[in-house]
Amino acid sequence: MRGRGVTRAGLFTLALSLALSWPAAAQREQGWAVRESLADPDAPLYNTAKQKLLEGAQIFTYTVATPDPDLYCDVAPHYDYIFIEMQHSTLSWADAEAMIAACPRVGIPMIRLPDVLEGSIQKATDIGALGVIGPTVNTVEQALALASFARFPPEGRRSAGRNQAARIWGVDGVNYRQTINDNMLVVAQIETPVAVENAYQIARIPGIDVLWASNGDLQNFSGLSTDSREWHAMFDKVKAAALRAGKFVGSTNAGYANTGPNGRPDAADWRFFYGGPSHDGYDPRRR
Image (tube, rainbow, N blue to C red; front, side, top):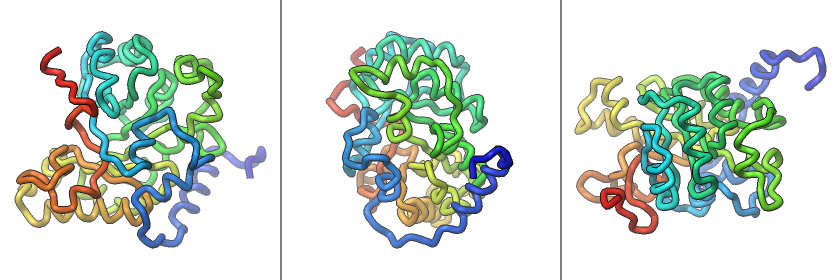
């Protein structure tokens, strides 16, 4: 099937048709399909954020949106992952590359991409990100591009080349090329009513690990009050889609991690968050 007569477009169409023809899976432990996608489900991951998700934990982040290697190095060890913001910032790829290189392996860098184009995903993975967050993923085609360009063949379509990522993560006997597909965490951000309607089809795409519901933009794009039943129903639908497909589910509101006044009664089901506490009690305000 990978012969000369099969074009890249043909492979894309084939992968899409296979994904959409899968039978619906019975609900099992959250993230079961992510675990089953690993080459060795029993091997510990150097992406500790993904490892924590597989162990049933909730994970939280700190956002870096300015070119500040000192800040990145200070906060990176204290959070489950670091959210490098490239959608709503003027950070350059060189800025992000320098921060990840400044203190390699002290934390888990993830990049919210400016888009889900091949060039952006290639740069993010090549500079050493262990996770990519695709903004405003509305369609199956966008989800397939996000998932496939984030991983090397045969699982994906990431191209090979000399890069910082291999120098950072390919140490102490680790073969970066052979291990990064399992360690990459791919997050599709669900931000519009269209994306909510397509959530299950997006979640079924191989290589999508997390559906991440956006509190702010779901209000922005829907025009619904955050107190309305219809607005909350969108979150229920995203969660149901992720669980049915065997993926993880998260919210940009870290309050959903608990059952308090601004939380949810099903807080334990929500695993991936924007903001939230450090994992060791570190307070960045004291920096």
